[in-house]
Length: 316
Image: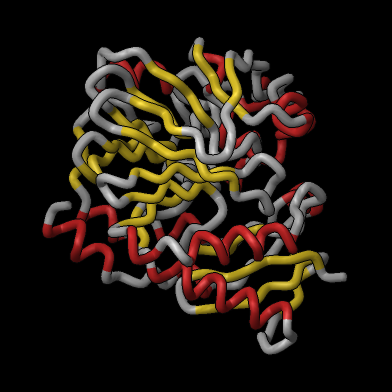
């Protein structure tokens, strides 16, 4: 890791403490913070090693040798996908919203063949899957169903005008936005090792946020790629496919890995988090479960705020 990256690990994002509100009925699928665009660009990105590429939709950062964070800063999700490069091939962990030409970005970063594996199959992590030939997934109904894609009506919330900050990708038509179907070419299991050539990644199943949520552990480089199981900001746990009890079990297991980690790489807002955040996350969830955490209510959601993140659950 560079010195700048270590400095970055000491920064606690303040944006996570901002209130969540919904400004119109169509935004009911995901709450919208009206002030989100005003906080961009996030200052923490100045401490990372940006890779200069001629693309105005994606920003690419080298967060570790052979690891590139591919960030989509102009849409509310602020999705981050990761290209992990070995000596023989690359693995693309998530493919973002599918609004820009991700294949072109990846090709500019490496000439190696690419395997795609999604942290889970929510639309904002599989949007670019169709651009790649080799796609791995869990062999479960949830993943297979999502591989069929999503219609415009199902994802139209993502292209409301208030979901964008700055210009859309060249040629992008929001009225035609959908998630294209993709072909799953192989399946992965818990504990499986993916060899990229000089770099091995262990698949860890971490159900909860979705039934197919998984993480990747790079033992040698002490990196955990965590997807949506944790990120700095409001963590959404209220959708029908979320299993709250399974989520608590998953984060408790991940917290035991902290002594083996130098960095946790997340899928939204900011790429780099400190490993000890996993211990704090597990403790926060225990407080929620035992009724010892305060919350605020906004519509159908209940939000529990902690230092650096919040947990958003259904208000039952």
